Amino acid sequence: MRSIRHGWLKSLLAASLIAGTAGLSATAASAADLLDSVKQAGVLKVGLEGTYPPFGFRGPKNELDGFDVDVARAVAAKLGVKPEFVTTEWSGIIAGLQAGKFDVIVNQVSVTPQRKQVLDFSTPYVYSAAQLIQRKDDKREFKSLEELKGHKLGVSLGSNYNDLAKSVPGIDVKTYPGAPEYLRDLAAQRVDAALNDRLMVNYLIKTANLPLRPGAVVPGANAEVAIPFRKDNPKFAQAIDHALDDLRKDGTLTKLSVKWFGSDVTKPGK
Image 1: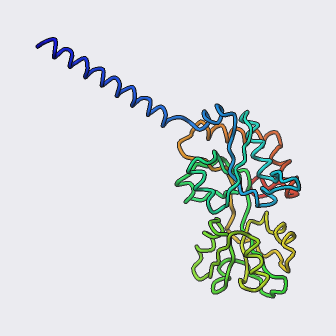
Image 2 (image 1 turned 120 degrees about the horizontal axis):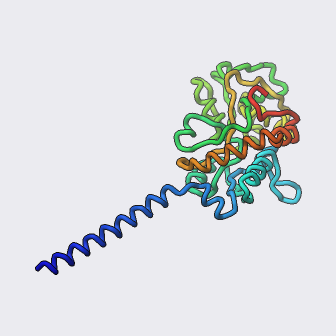
Image 3 (image 1 turned 60 degrees about the vertical axis):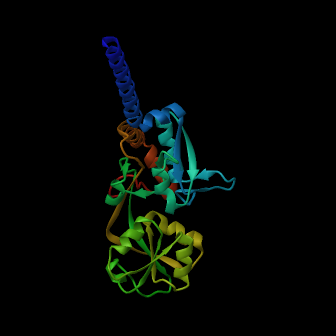
């Protein structure tokens, strides 16, 4: 009887040890930091649209180019890995990050309270604001979103400008897949104004070849642009911030900003 009981206790103890080891392995796996997998792979997977000049777009030889592309390459270099770009539509880019299709997004993602609930962000690397776009022949001058109450405003679906426009009751917000679509509707008088990043407005108007003009910068709609990644990766967060800090100190961010925008937009108030 004693030998039988002793064998049962040994089996129970062994089972407990196995279960405990499995639990520790599961805990270790869940606690693995994104930095470890990025370093192990030697690659930083970067999500971006690739159709959003001058931030990220295809050049004459179909190669990716733009301000955000340059920033992503510089950050990856500071981490000691190679960038691997994954292009995706803006409407699904946040979901793609959450699903692990890429490690970060470098695509002019503004920091918002809603996004911070589901993602972590680096320190900002661009400071911008929202700006209106109007028709050249429109004598009206909308100076704020409040003045657009009762009017139609075009924005990109899923953008923070969509959220900003809808935060003002009374605006008839029209959403579009992207800027080309709402700019055409603006020129055709199907909407009264459009809303985008002030860094983009002059470029959009120039390349659209439509009778449009820059409108007012929206008061109080300043934006901080940063690099989002999945939550609970403290080592990765520290490494990304350290990389951006180095790029500020050595002048790389300023150099890239002047290259693409003609001024330094990487510091507050610029």
